[in-house]
Length: 145
Image (cartoon, rainbow, N blue to C red; front, side, top):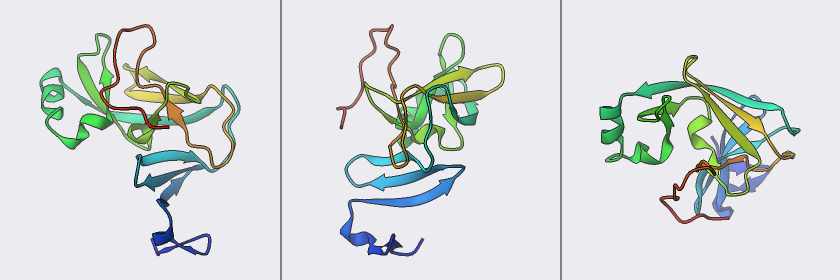
């Protein structure tokens, strides 16, 4: 991609758009990293994306913790002992404790469905909650707003 976005030099920004597909685009932010943003608006209940996954065994999940992929996988399988890397933009959605989207895994289909749960306007970052609110899980990083 060239160094221009909306007629401005990218070096002046802390973020830059790096790719786009199907009404979604990725922005690379120097503080938060990559995130998925809306190029179209979404209403509550709208399907945002369906992502196929690459499923990993429990032993492969143990290895993933030693790699950069640790921050990009989903717990997978009915007992969540496996891992899955979501294709499409699925593994790039950032976390929020007040998300505007949710995800539903379909283990039998090998897919993750991302759905709008709060109105999302054009230009909004699409955020999911990484933690199941019914569990005692804790985030493994400091949440950035």
